[in-house]
Amino acid sequence: MAGDGKSSVFGDQAGSAELLWGGRERPSRGPKPALSLDRITRTAIALADIGGLGAVSMQRVAGELDFTKMSLYRYVPGKTELVALMIDTAMGEPPAGRADATGHAPDGWRAALREWAGQLSAVFARHPWLLGATVGPRVMGPNELGWTERAVAALAGTGLTGGEQLDAVLVVSGHLRAIGQVSASMGVGSARASEPEQVMSAALNELLVGRSDRFPALAAAVASVEADAAGRGQALEFGLERILDGLESYLSARAAGS
Image (tube, rainbow, N blue to C red; front, side, top):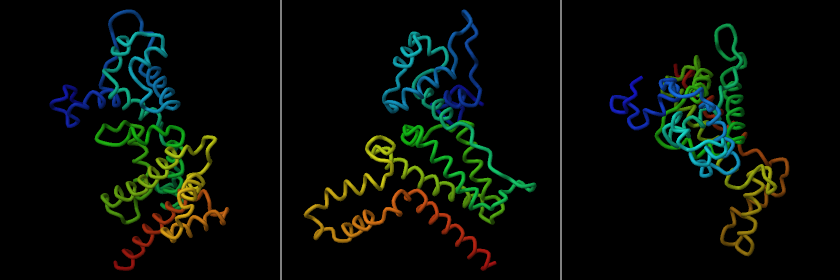
C-alpha cells in the first residue's frame, strides 16, 4: 500500500490506511517502548465513551497515560489517525455468523441479516460516538470492513446483484444509525429513559399541550403510543422488519418474473 499520501487513492488519509492495515512500522529507536498503539487507542475510546469524541485530544490521551503528547506522535501522527484506530477497535471483529456446508446461513438470509443488525446496533449502543465518527469520507479498517463482509455474505445466493447487495446493507445500516442517533440524542440508557419512543412521546406530549387542534394527526398518534404499552420500544425492530419485508417482496417479484 502506498504511504506517501500522493500515489495512494486515500490521499491525505493514507496515514490512516497505513495504521489500520499494517503499513506503519513500530518505533525502532530509543529504549523499549512503554506505550503501544493498542493502549493509546483503548485509552482514547474510554475517554470517548464517557465524554464523546470531543473529549478526545492527543494531549488528553497523553495525560491519561502519564506520557507527553510528543511520546504519542511516535505511534500515531495525529487525531485523525487516532480516530480511525478508535473506530476499528471499538467496532471489533464481527461475531461469526452461522453457516451451513455451502457457506450460507442455515436459517436464510433474513434471519442472518436480522442477527447482524442486532449485533451492530449493540455496538452503536456501547459506543454512541461511533455514529458521528463514521460519517464522511474516511478509511475503513479491517474490523469495520469485516462487518460489511458478513452482511453482504448473508445476501449471497439471493439473486441480488452485487450492487443491490451493497445497497440493501446500506439501507439496513442506515436504519440502525438513525435509531442509534435518536437514542443517543435523547439520553436513552441514562436515567432519563430506556427507549427512544418513551422520551419522544414525553417531549411531544409537552409540546402538544393546547395545540392538538393545530396538529391533530400527531396528537392522535402520540396518544395511541401512550395507551399501547406493548407497542413501545419497537422502533428498531419495526423498521428493520419492514426493510426485510421489502427485500423479500422484491426477491419474490423477481423470481416470479423470471
